[in-house]
Length: 214
Ligand code: NYM
Ligand code: MG
Image (cartoon, rainbow, N blue to C red; front, side):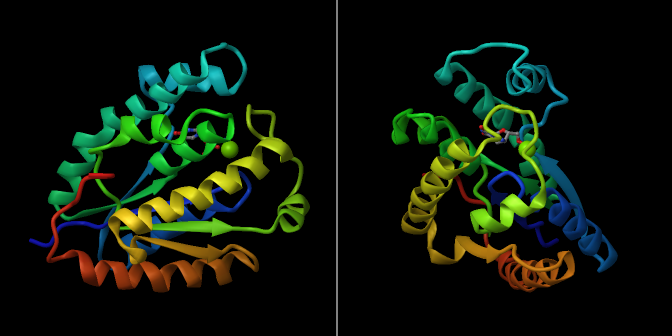
């Protein structure tokens, strides 16, 4: 049996990720694939509840401590992701380790410190990085009330995402990280994403799931 594909959508807050991951999972299931959504952070677990409290400013945590909790939150989901992929289920993740690096490095933590805890996690077959110019993002309504949702932090995170993109392409190949313009209607962006995912689905069958950064 063919394994499932591991697809990640990344991007800044208000890039339209959550809308697009939901549409992608629906479309996969409607076209004869088995697919499920995996959100990171997964706020339903014990670690996820600590992350949620931090993001809502109900708890204070050291920058390194919260970084490691975000990573631990991925590790506690890693076995289920591998099992489901092996059973032919495609996983669509809303954020992954790349957000982990970009947001923490934007706060000033060393890039290699940010990268290391996730080494060995399941390697996405394709990461789509949704981009919106700042002036477009600002027309999508006010930022929410969570930590990091301000223009200064988003600008610095955008710069770090560029470094993450280079790292993925250097270590795992150019075609693992593809930038997608999130400018346009929801349907236009969906069509761009679908074309890229369709190509990735054809490629994964023959390959094993890799290990991130290794
Ligand atoms: N975030 C997300 C991190 O800082 N590190 C991580 O590892 C991950 C997965 O959490 N502003 C940040 C990015 C977001 C925030 O994500 C919550 P969302 O997708 O808005 O629930
Ligand atoms: Mg958000």
